[in-house]
Amino acid sequence: DAGVIQSPRHEVTEMGQEVTLRCKPISGHNSLFWYRQTMMRGLELLIYFNNNVPIDDSGMPEDRFSAKMPNASFSTLKIQPSEPRDSAVYFCASSPGTSGNTGELFFGEGSRLTVL
Amino acid sequence: DQQVKQNSPSLSVQEGRISILNCDYTNSMFDYFLWYKKYPAEGPTFLISISSIKDKNEDGRFTVFLNKSAKHLSLHIVPSQPGDSAVYFCAISRGYSSASKIIFGSGTRLSIRP
Image 1 (cartoon, chains in turn brown, cyan):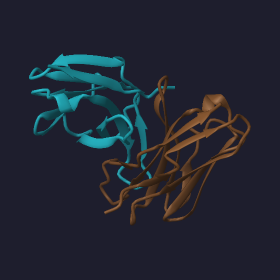
Image 2 (cartoon, chains in turn yellow, brown; image 1 turned 180 degrees about the vertical axis):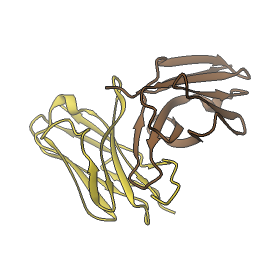
Image 3 (cartoon, chains in turn red, brown; image 1 turned 90 degrees about the vertical axis):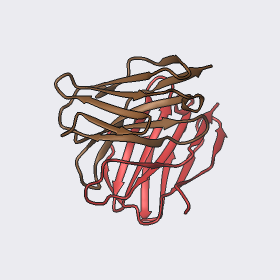
């Protein structure tokens, strides 16, 4: 079975450019999460969706960040304009969302973003 | 406002001995406590969890202990093996529903030395 698929795996861009990260969750999973990993802050929750609806976006750093989930099989995280401090590994994760869910997430391999 | 804290950024343990990773949390309103393991260039993978109504859960070499009065969570690995070298994240989950918010700590890098 395919796991969570993220693209691109690596992105190098210049400050001011738009960056779009993509995620395909595991089929049948109802919840989708975007996390950012940095040395200083570990794994930060940016936003999460349930049944394609954003539930909590309080972790989104600022207006330069936006996330969408147009359907159950696709989500994007966009940064416009990008800044060097956005450099990090961005993870997408999905969860079955069944009753009694313990919070087990299935992560993609991450998208490493470098903003010069 | 850091709700989950892992105060030790790194830990080195000799192969065969016990590894103990610690985690503190600030909010009592969480239902599940989890540990994830992460290898370089890979996403985190679920390791073990514990419900807030229990104080211990064991799975093979891995045991998680929950001390609710101290708001403290620990992961014991015994015996430690070279393949256990990774970054370990503790996480807290609120609610049983699919809309649970899952918050991670900053991670502890475990190194198992020969």
